[in-house]
Length: 182
Image (tube, rainbow, N blue to C red):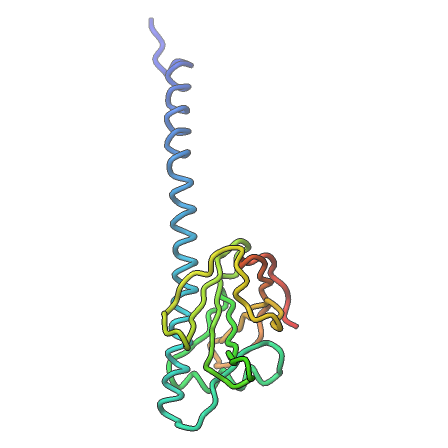
């Protein structure tokens, strides 16, 4: 009487096939996850800057809403953009800085955003150059020299409360650390 079942060779072949498939699938999965994180950063930055422009169009003498993390008024300033469709994403850090010329005169605003994961890429929206959202190349010094190289995460809950949720440290235009709120 012959016993039925799998031989050791057959099991090793199945394991090898599964290992080859995993070697193909895992890198593809990580690329898709990174693309989705980048898309979330770009979408938030686009939505933020469109709300800024809408505020300027609707209220003619309104100042741009600057989010630099340096003032306690950031929360109140951000709520001004809610009427224009902006809602912060607690997975994406951002900042809105004022660009000035060599004489200190304001030129417009520049927004930066990155996903909260370590190693996520930095994106910029330059309202002056009007180039739209684009990635900041690694190693270039894109932040103004007086700025602390941090992005700020805000949480908007179901009750309509806006809170500071954390900070992202940026080094070489990628997220290098996730810090608690200041």
